[in-house]
Length: 95
Picture 1 (cartoon, rainbow, N blue to C red):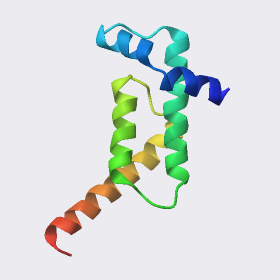
Picture 2: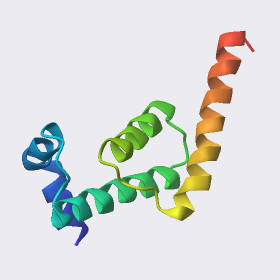
Picture 3: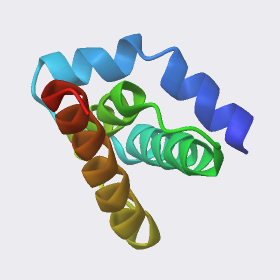
């Protein structure tokens, strides 16, 4: 199932067409986007390293398609965002 949803989402010319026209995605396309984006986020959370830029892109994609975060991911995403910004502040302050 993931492969089918991923194929729909990654070949997203039609999805982009709806997005550019500011039209809501038809339910099957939205379901594909929702599934793939949340799966990407879950895979990100399973990785050992924190790539803050990638996290920002993932959240931006979710937001861009108006896909809600799954409830379990919200708290984890918040902690990672704080960790990313803390790391940036430390680098800026020269610590």
